[in-house]
Length: 413
Image (cartoon, rainbow, N blue to C red; front, side, top):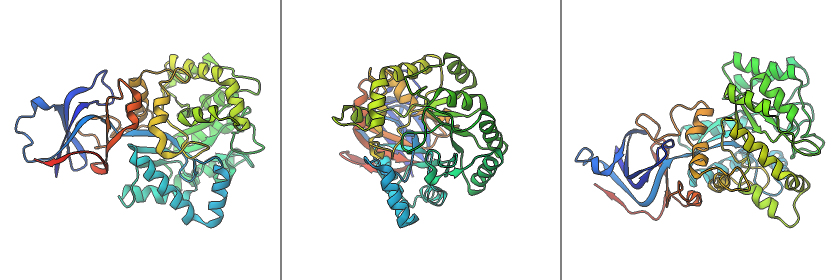
């Protein structure tokens, strides 16, 4: 069936301005035509018509950093350990609920960076087959960490280059879309050090080399400057968080930023609405108190990456403390705030649509153009002018299939 969608504005994910009074035609899950309503004539008189008055139609959102089986509560690790003790079915139910929450707010692709293989890949296939309400899933499955390292509960624990090679091979065999490695410690895991590298430079090179041999690319979690430097030198494709944080402050490395820009290594800062809420809490956790004290320097470092031309990938760390899956529009909107990256609304939207697709190597989504998947989001208002309108979801289409329909007048032509 051919569907003709008409909206006050159609933004393709790239252009400086939207098409006013635009249309998009969808056939068999793909976009086949885009233009101005005044140019339609009688070409699509037989199409099913969906009018979206008062809305902007834009590409579906891409969340570049999620954890499918985390709860997003104040105690995500405790929740996870309780669920995993109950069995994979409970973890799977958590993942399905998270994915539905993401889909309902216009997220049409997620990159999962840390979930047990048996859950991650089963849910990914269920989503691809249309058996659950879900964005498309790209997943690393189980990451690579050191013994007792960050997120060791669902990771391969490796202490030698050979163990790293075996872990990468296991992930490739299991069906991973990419490899995730924890180059530094992190805040969620007691007795790890977010300010120090977990792996040597050689170990990171082995990980990237083995992944590359098997046709996979590597996402490296890294808070600290040395972990970031090693991951960039090893050839990781994206650096997650990338805060340049030390025990005493923040040490931005302009040379590393230049190297990332030259090699087109993306960064996913995972700052957003959840961080804002945590920072505003009257009694924040010790990691949040630490980040609050360092926030101006962290923001300056992240802006330094943007200014250096490092590709920016929007992602929320959905599932970790205070980052629910259904909050992603607010997370993207937070990138515009002067307390965060201070982006223009358009630049923030690019980071969650066409720019994200480019960094993730997705050639079939992230833009509204003929031949692309019909991953579409309609929001009330104009998020290119007021980014807060991104959180006013009215309609979501995933690969040509409607996922959510609310407060709209639908008519058949």
